[in-house]
Length: 275
Image 1 (cartoon, rainbow, N blue to C red):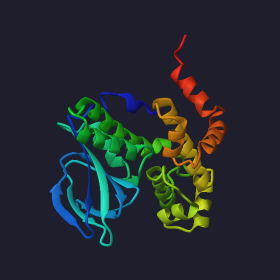
Image 2 (spheres, rainbow, N blue to C red):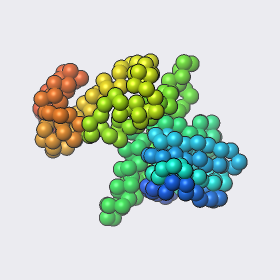
Image 3 (tube, rainbow, N blue to C red):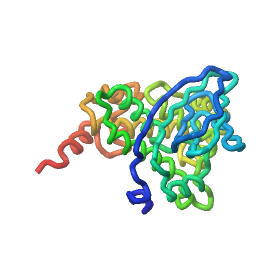
Image 4 (cartoon, rainbow, N blue to C red):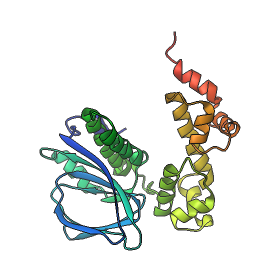
């Protein structure tokens, strides 16, 4: 953990936040506009070309662009397919210089940080379904989204060999998290990454230290463990929601990854504070 993450003087809560999602038809465009806020725009499908103060950026699916207040923006969406994107905007009365300097030092476009897509979707759900909307919690969630993005790109956390993954791997990682409850194959992942299955496997071994399908089952097990600890779903319901074909397969992998059966994992979590 980096010191500045917990420093409220450097990372104050925004005065206002907005979460949202939208789909644009192929070839749509808008602008120019002057960006009023700090805004993270996450491309879910399709692609985006945006010119900010005469600098052009291409944002592919599975990537996010960080927009800064005062930038003049022109948006051009994928000419061949619809583009879906989500966003979170953070409004400050005056952007703290520490935040401004740090964000301007980071790459404007990057793959989604782990957990960023899910966090923004949670904000969207809260904004549109909770009545009244929990604005204080949403302000904190929006700041957490910004911190996830910053921490993932912080130069202090990237080794000299560059720990950021190549674009095909980032696409595959994003696809896994978006499709985790559905059947997946190596061919599915390779298609999402726009490379051959063999090349994707080589990239995963180099940058993720496992094969693509091993990563899929690891993520399913991790999400399953989270549901066991934090929901009342039955073990079978958890197994099916995270993409296992049977509770038996889920139990076997859970033992391999945690050393506990699903039932033992739930009991140890739910009763950890028991005297």
